[in-house]
Image (cartoon, rainbow, N blue to C red):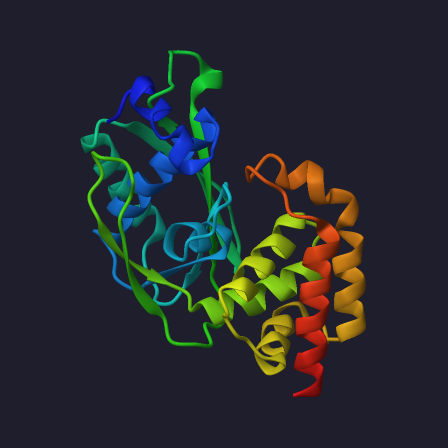
Length: 256
């Protein structure tokens, strides 16, 4: 495992603060050990998938997955934790909740910044959706961590067009500015999605898609924009510029 001084070297490369660099490092360590033990049973998705697999330049806290094939969650997570221990990172986990819809775990790790105090532990939340359908072909991506002691690894990740549809859904169903930033990132990468896919994703919440409702939901995030994103990215873009591009894209979707 790297040391505190090692992590400091990656500050300029990542744009993250030291605590975020540590969490990013441990996220990679978890994913390496997880995907050594499974194939496409769990499909990586969400903001951290965009950051690890598609080049999103913002820090992301949680690891989100969709269940593709039935597995023994406790056994897989336990074996993953044992693998992290072999990397020199002492870790354990606890199940936070489980129902017919989802399961969540919390990983607790003694990373490079651990100094013996409880508050210096690193916590990573794992969310697994058990019932949501995966609608587009799952992709296999080679991930090459920047950290010199971590090997490349192969990961099963959600198609970016499907992540994009889920980001539109997230903008409608919750109030987080990061969802707008992630959608903006995907638009600038020329990723495409369609109204039909968005509507399919909203069925999970029994919500009908309406463009005006979506645009109102975008507008509502302005009050959260700077304070939230200032903690996640080095340079926060102007909200009005981002909103204009998203509105233009969505109105074109309506015409198609």
